[in-house]
Image (tube, rainbow, N blue to C red; front, side, top):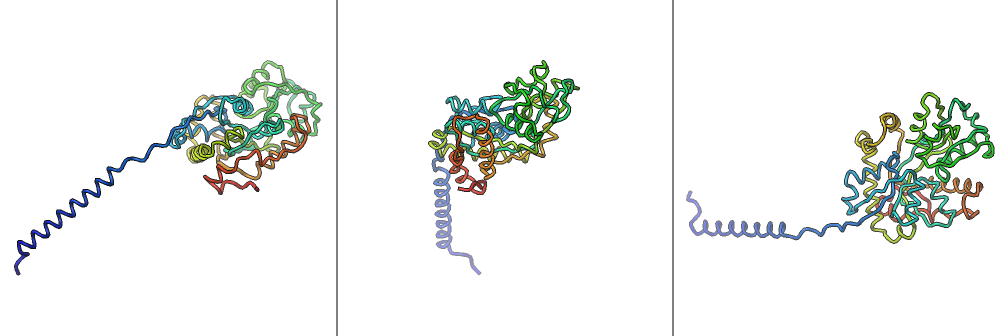
Length: 342
């Protein structure tokens, strides 16, 4: 049987050459397409309590490049409390801040527009009271008549009041003294107060400041701490695209903190050896996640009743805390994470 004629071979070769040329043109067109324009980089000033474990999603979003991936150049500003972080936001020194629920309540009662874009952390065994055994503080009931240091206007004060109420102690049966969170350990060591209320890592610092003389009472049955990211209402609502980008970065950061505990704890490089050990032991009880839960609104209302009763705000009526929660961002990014009834 004879092979293809020279004419046929020429046709096949021409066809093969044409296909090769067309394939080359197609590949050239594919790879010669201009790259998509880069995501514009936006600078964001974020006030954060960098030593508090609840800030882990923010620190991870920064350290692991999740903010950068979303086109955000995050500048972290360190503060010793959520109250101080929120004050920075309200004074225009930061765009967003990490804060517990109490400062948001107090801002609302002062008619300051603050909105939470998400809760990022929850822990029960996180607040407590450290007392000096040599001053007669050995049981919760023995706090009666004692001087107690606390950072007023924070979750530490709310947890302390709830704890005293559980012991059937009236506010007038103790003497409160106001200190910044990082000053409580020294005040306790100097004997200026008989006990001090606060949260980690300051509780650990207090116990070490009076080593061998410390009694510690945790408030897990009276207060479950929520840690949030919040901003001024006008700023948040005027930057919806930015909020979505921030939330996507925080979701990745929270996942990192939950799934990579060893690497996440390394973000707190300044922690003392004792605090690092405590953090490792307690890590399994921490809940990292980016949510807006109905429980947040219930907590804000409960805390507002407490604040109104203690005349801590300018108004005596209950605010509508739906105005203090920004739902649009998280509903766009992770709608299943929003359970607020609205």
